[in-house]
Length: 160
Image 1 (cartoon, one colour):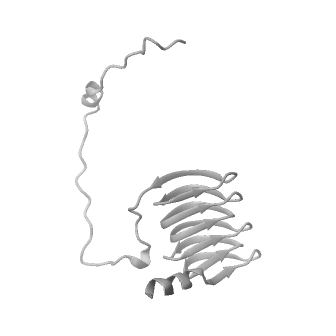
Image 2 (image 1 turned 135 degrees about the vertical axis):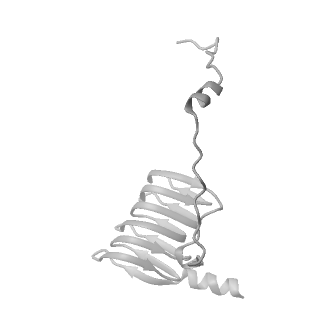
Image 3 (image 1 turned 180 degrees about the horizontal axis):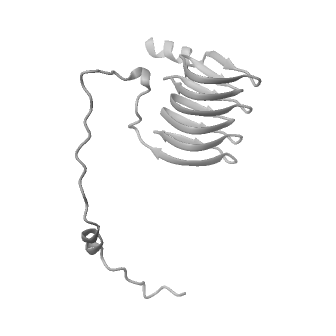
């Protein structure tokens, strides 16, 4: 029953920025949200974000699912799926377990397909007493590394 309730909430459009809207800031929401205007800032949600044909977004995005018909510049971390339709344009970085790119879409991004997507900020537990410490830096002798590489051999069957 809980799964069906979540599915209904995810399919319901709970927010909308129209084409003449321009907003800068931090956006978080539940349900589905559609942007047809301009947005600059950060977006955090476990839900569905839809970028309409006229939508232009410049943001760091941590989301459940995203459907892109407009333009995004920035970092996208999707917990479930990134879908870029034919009219979509993405410039930046994508980290997601599933990536769908329709023919005709523009994609200029570093893509990492992984199931280990960081949680949105709203899902992380922050404990002030526990500050992560960086491991000590290990120095590498570059002469030693280059000496360990095998010598490059030319394939005798290769013709110039």
